[in-house]
Length: 177
Figure 1 (cartoon, rainbow, N blue to C red):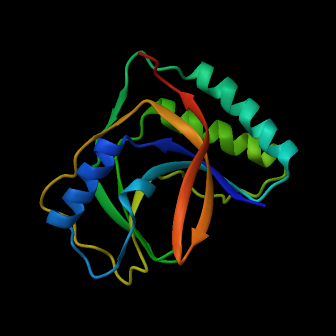
Figure 2 (figure 1 turned 180 degrees about the vertical axis):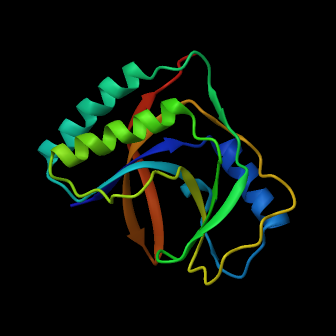
């Protein structure tokens, strides 16, 4: 079975901008995460049977309709942190938009109702940029570029030659121009 999760999609241009910013303003001696893997996780569902995946997708359909945006959402990336247990350095926003909180909460509620384990901790929308990190990073002197969000996807995570690859297998548009 595949390891699955829902995440906000970050446009390739924004992924590259964040990668360049990381290189220029937060170059650290840890394993860098490939820019094409940059995303903001909404809900991790892991390896579950197909019926539960379909039910999660139905919930995503409803949540997407309920949280349609009038325009693409800009998220300001203004903080940097470290998940010590996971050994991950991440970028985040100190201001989580309500639509994002509702979307993540809705997906997590559906997962719980289906018996899919969800960690009970506050939601921190973040972009992982380093793995195998051993200490809290310094706060960068320059703010990271903001990102524009138009969609979210159901992703499949797979490992190939010690590299993690994420493949979008279904997409929902929050804003349709």
